[in-house]
Each structure stands twice: as C-alpha cells, then as structure tokens.
Image (tube, rainbow, N blue to C red; front, side, top):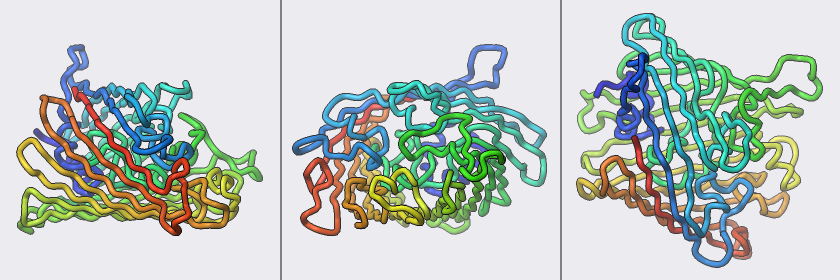
Length: 403
C-alpha cells in the first residue's frame, strides 16, 4: 500500500509504528459520488481489574481517560471512531480533508469535545488538507488536528500498550485547533511548524472544547492568546543497513496561560531504534513541561513557575507471527502534583511505572491484548496516594475491532 510521505516520516519518529500507520491508511471507499473518500474507524472496549482495595488510580490527572478511576473494576466501552478522509494527490495543487469523530467516554477528554458530558461526542480531527507543489510538496492542515509531539497517540490500537504513558496523560497536549504546515526535505529529514488556539490542547480537567479561546485577564479587549509549535524528524535511510528506519524526533509547543505571566512550554525528544534482530525494536521518549497547569498547581497550593517531566523506555519483541510482547518503563516527577495530585503541598510527586502488554492476533481486524501495569509512589515508604495504597496494580483486557 502506498503511504503519504509525511505519514511515513511521522511513523518513523516513534509516535506510532509503521504497521499501525498502514492499518490507519487501510480505509475503504465510500459508495457515493465522492468515490475518493474513504471510511474507517474502530470500536474500542476493555475490562480492567484493579488489584487491592479501592479503585487505586487518582481521579484528577493521574491516568488518561481509558484507564481512569471510573474505568477500574469493570467492563468499559471506551470509544467508537468514525473517520472520513479524502487524501491529497501527489505532485500537484491538491485539496482534501479528514474528519475523525469520537463517540463515548474518551471523547470527553478531547480538545475537540462538543461538551455533551459523559459518553459525549468530539472531533478528534477535523481539518482541510492542502498541498502546494513546492519542491517535494508543502502540506497544510487547517482546523482541528493531532498534536505534533509525543511517542504515543490517542488511538489505543496504534500504541504498543493499552494504558497511556505518564507523559502522554499529564504533560502533552491532546490536539490543536489552528494551522499546521509540513515539509519533507528528503527521506532523511522532515519538519513541521504551526500556530493554534491556546485553549484547545486538552490534558487538564475542564477541557474548554472546540472553538474556545483564552485571553489574559489584564488584556480582555485584545485578541486571544495562541500556541506556537515546531518539530523536526531525522530518519535513517535504507543504505544504513539494520539501522534503517531508526529515527529521532524533537518538538516544542509554546503556549500562553490565561491570567498568568508564566507561559507553559512543552519540550519533547523521542525516537525509535532498529536492532540487528528484526524481531526486537526499542524506543525512548522524554517530556518536559515548564510552567504547567495552573489548575493542578492550585490543588497543591503552588503558584508561579513549575515543572513536570517524564521519561519512558519502550521495547517490543515479535515472539511468533501472532504474538507480540510490548514493555514500557517510566519515571516521572513534578513540583506541582502533575502525576499525584494528593501529595502534600510543597513536596515533589515522583512515580515509577512498569507496563507489560501481550498482543495476540487471533481474529482478523481485531486487536486482542492483555496488560499488567504497576505504578508506585517514590520518595518515601509512608506515601499512600492510591486510595491509601503505595502501589497501584491493574490487569486489563483490551479488544478493538478496526474497520
């Protein structure tokens, strides 16, 4: 299957595996006058058992929605996605679009949420795509689009693990509303730059929703504040032997914080490394958020500047044609309660986490995987942040049908 050149470049960053990118591109023509439009999507379900008493995980920020406190100890419908897309043509002035609609509880966490409450509706992406035949092709997205930083993505099946990393859940934006331009200089290097509304980023509770805009309290009559972003990807070409496909990605998102003079800035570096053993692949990601959420800072009584950072290490091993094992190790800390909001004011929250996921391809078009996750609060034996427990251990079953 022929993939868009920028899709290939982004897949190389470790944001999503190339296999997942291929699956995402495997859509089907809609039988209408718009024969070039494709239809795809998925149904994402899970069952989670939290070991021990209580629900374990925090209900404020600790986890992404699909493994939050309301999903523990029971069966869940996470999301249903319907996607329509008309891809761009190569080598000419071209226009297209993509609409990804989410229905279900996960939709409430998205910056494109329509604000319908629990089990709501959101536009994960909804943009007009444009291509100018400049050099290798200068591409634009105008509307609601996915974030440019992060090793993991919103679509669960496209990640090596079912649960999201600490950096994804608590530091990275979930999406943007604005304009993004991308250019692939060669098969080795590509870049992107963009500008978006500051408020449409997600991640914090009380996500403003689509078309929301922020202004500083002292500048109410001025135009709304904006976020600015840029990223660059380097990919090892085929001529590098077993290193081919290895990549390094760096990105930055600078925002404006309503009513504050400390602007939040996301710094991200991540990559994937091929190995001499084709069954084994490894990756790593580092997130740093300067001047994090003022909402989270208020919870622990800290004002002004703050920081949160997280490092994640990944490894995947293809055991058999159908069985794949994915492992992730994490360490995250902040000085304002980004990961453990109920840590005492003035103390740093520190979390160590390990996740092991077994992905077994049993049915066609179905992702079936089992996952074991362990989180623990570091920094003292007397810490009991998980409903009175020091450790949070959960077992999950995730079943997704892709169409």
